[in-house]
Amino acid sequence: MRPTLETGLTGLGLDPALSTPLLDYLALLARWNRAYNLTAIRNPREMLVKHLLDSLAMHAFVNDIAAAGGALADLGTGAGLPGIPLAITKPGLRVALVESNGKKARFMREAIRKLDLAPRVRVLESRIEAVDEAGAFDAITARALATLPLIIELGGPLLKPDGVLLAMKGTHPDDEIAALPAGWTLRASHRLDVPGLDAERHLIVVGRDQGRT
Image (cartoon, rainbow, N blue to C red; front, side, top):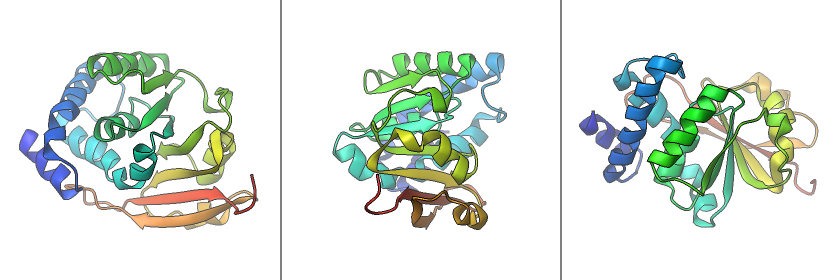
């Protein structure tokens, strides 16, 4: 699968050499998935596109945060997606993986250990609303988690005053954007191209209204 991943990484503007740690993560995920049902996708080649490359399609939008040594909270991360692939490709990024499922949290701790990602990557085994780190993060992200209003309700308090939600969506979520809670606004919407995936993907950027905290 290495040539496929290297081609995909090149297409996303990433170093093909990153394929080695990413494939190590994928192999660990596939092995644990056979016993613990961490993801519904079973085929490793399908995981490569629908998990790794799909997660990394948003990488450019965390460049500034990573360059500043900033912090990202990945909400409802499951098996660590997109948080672990982003952490592998952005060495300056500090990532908190928020997941309440014990089996998935155990897998992520093992992945962090095997991939030598500690201490800048950590697991918060918790429901999102129970994380006691208000205002600690430059960004929160969520991939196939919930509607934008619900993500803001649960995870918004974790953001710094100027922090943003980077929400990964399929089709453009016009209704969810229209339903954003008071005090929050759409900052940007980006169409994402995922190598090897023939499906619509968008990154929705939401932040507090300017002048509000």
